[in-house]
Image 1 (tube, helix red, strand yellow):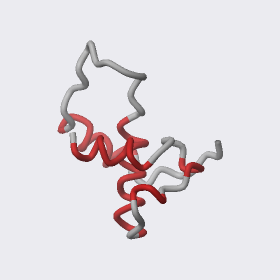
Image 2 (cartoon, rainbow, N blue to C red):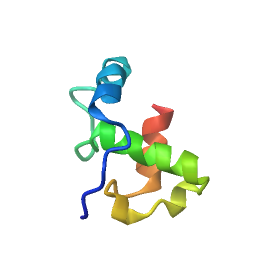
Image 3 (cartoon, rainbow, N blue to C red):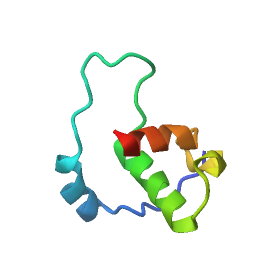
Image 4 (tube, rainbow, N blue to C red):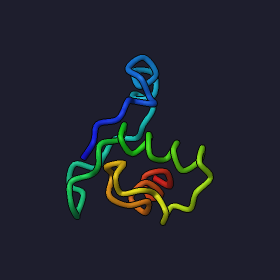
Length: 73
C-alpha cells in the first residue's frame, strides 16, 4: 500500500473525531477500518463523482461498500 497525504489533516480530524458515533464494543465481523481513512475515501468518492463500486483498491480501505456502510452508519 502506498502512503498518501491526508486530505483530512490533523486539525480538521481533531474537530471531526468527537462527533463520530462510538463503535460498538462487541461488534460482529472483522475489525473496523480506521474512521479517518474511511472518511478520506468517502470524500474521494464524493469529489471524484465515482460509484462506490469503482473506489480504487489502492486507496487502502478495501472496498467502496465498506465506506458506503460507514457513511450510512
